[in-house]
Image (tube, one colour):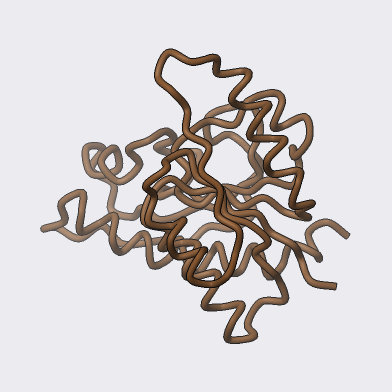
Length: 191
């Protein structure tokens, strides 16, 4: 039976697109049943619509009720009855109401080798620390910031002339591969 996946994203949706391409190519036995974004103008929503996938915007208003937003997000995702939720470039923390319903079956990608460099600026922080190797991680989301159980990691060499953008672009290549692998292996992970 195919893994039904809801993808959460905030921007261009390149991670989601990589997953969709892998599904279309028969590399992953999964189906993206919906894409949800916290940004109404996210390009990733357009990518979903181009594939005939329901695309839902659920923006958070600055100064709004974060707990209510999180509970509404959980309700939106629940409508699509996913086996797995893939946070792929989703730039909001998932709160207690969401994790109560989808904890243990929500994964996230991160552009660093966790537990090093958690938070929003993994590539920048890796460069500032002077590491020679960085990379990407896929982990199970928990209540902490990038603290969940690590499922997969892939290394990326830090080159002497790297800036944040150059390093991040190479990390994204590995991040896409790891997301596809994590979704592909999810059934085995949960058996």
